[in-house]
Image 1 (cartoon, rainbow, N blue to C red):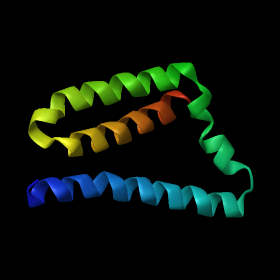
Image 2 (image 1 turned 45 degrees about the horizontal axis):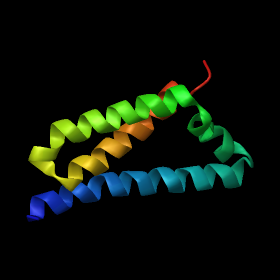
Image 3 (image 1 turned 90 degrees about the vertical axis):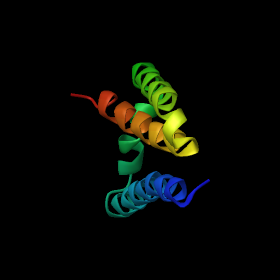
Image 4 (image 1 turned 135 degrees about the horizontal axis):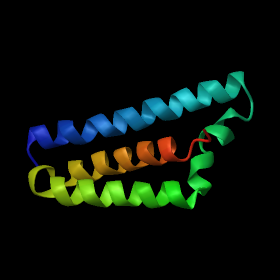
Length: 88
């Protein structure tokens, strides 16, 4: 893999780490908040949307970015599920 691909793969990994750290700090300040933030994982609708987004983005981006497309697709799928799974 060329240098650009490795840098492209690193960005979504850093974003996921930052979100995890943010969740941990919020949990320390407000116990139980992590469970509320990640409640979308039990929603079938949110998980189905995440799957559609992840598969679509991977299919579109694979030829250009390879494994970096998978990392970005998983991140986009998780963020989509988070938005859809929120109680409005």
